[in-house]
Length: 173
Image (cartoon, rainbow, N blue to C red):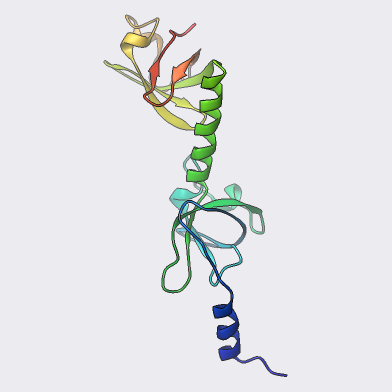
C-alpha cells in the first residue's frame, strides 16, 4: 500500500489543530536559524520561536538557552499562518510565571530582592527576577544620596512592593 502526498495532506486536514494565542503548548527544539528556533509542537508545521522571545534576558547563543531536542513548555503569541505555523515565546511564558510568583509574594507580604541596574534623578531602575522596574526616589530610604546606588552596581535591596504599579509600600531595610 502506498501513501501519496495527497493522502498525507488529507490525513493532516482530518486532524484538528486548534492552537490559540496565549495557549501553553509542549514542544521539542527541532532546529536553529540565525533569527530563531523551529519547535515541533505536533502541529501541521513546526512552530517558530524568534530569538528575542527565547528568554527574559539577552540571548547570544540559542543552543545554550535551548539545546537541540530539549522538550519544554512555550506560549503561543501568534496564531497559525496560512502554512499552519504558529509563533512561540518562552520569554512571555517566563514573564507570566514571574508575575504570578511576585503576586504570591505580595499576597503573603513577603519581601523581594531587587538588583539596582540604573540610577537617575527620579529614582532607581531595578531588576526583580528578570523583570525591569522603577522605584521612585521618594520611596527609598537613601533617597538623599542616590550615589549609594552607583548605576549598574548590582547592589541588592529588599522591600515589599505593589507590583501592579511598582510603588514601594515599605522602605528598603
